Each structure stands twice: as structure tokens, then as C-alpha cells.
Length: 102
Image (tube, rainbow, N blue to C red):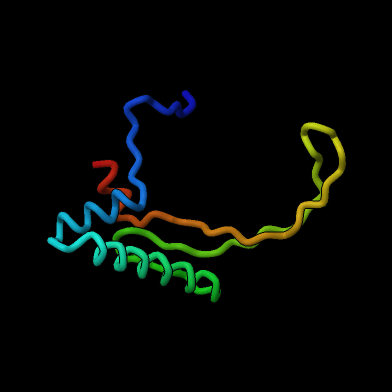
């Protein structure tokens, strides 16, 4: 059966992550925001350099390169050249998978 989003599904966004960190560690929201921003920026900078980021027990991030190709515009049917691109790729770690499937 295909995955279907339910109305009860919750999502955590960046501001909720900051709020949770502040509450759990007894920090001011501004301090928590600086920590989260520094963490995200460090991962982005490492990926831009071409490094692989591994967080033991959580997962790893790396960049994947995709070749360009000739495609079609679905609305008009016109031929379109799609440029090569790099996209971030996340692979969950063993501990995270085991935790989620316990």
C-alpha cells in the first residue's frame, strides 16, 4: 500500500527544534538558536567542501552528483536540457534505524 499522509502526522521544524533544545537543556531560546544554526551551518559548509559528515548513531550526509540530460517539459512537450546538479543525500545510521523500528 502506498504511503499516505495522515491528518495526525506532525512535523518538527527548525523553530520547534530550537524550542525543544532550550527547554531540555535550560537554555535561552536565543542561545539554542545559535547552537542549531552553528550545527546546520557546519554541515552545509562541509558538504560544500565535498566532505562526508557522519554523526555516529544518527546517520551521514554526503553530496551526490547527477549528470545532465535531455528531458521534456510535461506541459508543453518541449525538449529541455537539464543541467548537472549536486544534491545532499542522508543515510540513517544503524542505531537510528534500530531505535525507530523497536
